[in-house]
Image (cartoon, rainbow, N blue to C red):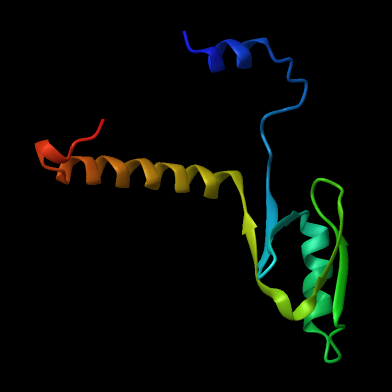
Length: 108
């Protein structure tokens, strides 16, 4: 048994592992995860005719964030179903790639 598995089995995790739905605010600064209500607030600020230079909001973890509005490139909804489909697609692509490898290319 690996040491990591032993460690993980002994960790007391009191939080629910299911994250649920959230929104990802992406830009030149990286990514911040926010609630639906916060994403809607950010969208309203960006939709205004007189867009403010700086946006202030709280991310999913409770951190206060202040970013330049022009730095936001996208706001994307992320649901558990979407993440499950992404994982399914990733596994299928890995199987497909593995099937295409020649015997001497196999590094597993």
